[in-house]
Length: 322
Image (tube, rainbow, N blue to C red; front, side):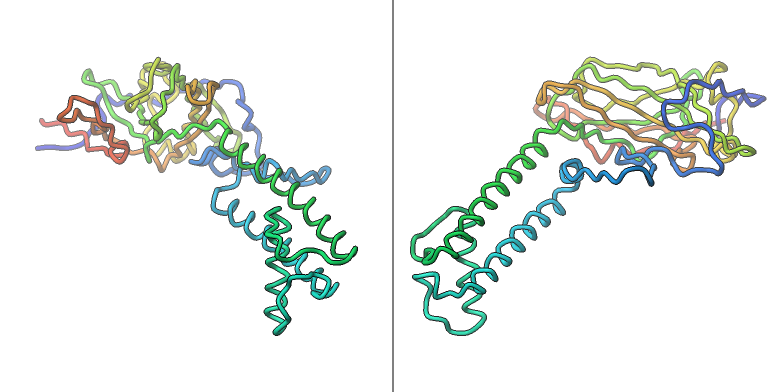
């Protein structure tokens, strides 16, 4: 008969040894959501105080598609505004513009001249014919130079900002070693082809008191808390020994204490020549019990190790035959 079991379960629940608050908070009036999301962001909102919106941080950190869309919209709005201003002065002040046909064609002629001025292309077919249009085109040329300088700086900032693309397993697992020692595990891999060196891991246990909603933190000692190189996947393991804050806790206790496993990674990136960081967490409902990870890499016919990022998440049931 085959069944799943937690080898040598402890007979009593351990006391979670608290550690210092890592900066996430301890005293709360009600139960909070997870501390850290899978994208590394914190579940914290700010209100009150002086109104200081930082557009640079917002533009640097936003996703690429919204950023590109915003740049296109900004470029379009500015040129439409200048085109309408040229039309208000009169297209007869722009020698070289084709004879007006209708409102749409007049607008397109003014828009194309605006874009040529804004981008400093200057084909030479159309040019300002009066002081008013000359002044307006000069203003637009200045706005264009400043806008492209700003866009170039933002693009450089987005490309040069050091980031770590760490691939975390979707779930953490409670597994066991060959000697029967239970252990908490999760797995990571590098999504990029660059080399990360001196990768360090720090794992905290966050629990919530069901009666007071106060949060307690405890450091989880790891089998290995650092590796020199990170070309393959890395399974990070915490042994649940009698000294572990998790010792004696069953699945129902994980839910009752609102357990969250908080991970912080730090490594040196050869490409950026500086340190990069990554964060993640697993809540109690993202922890699978009585499982083990399936190997996520193999050796190809040419003798080169191949890491399968899709396999980073794959687990299988622990089975004990009696």
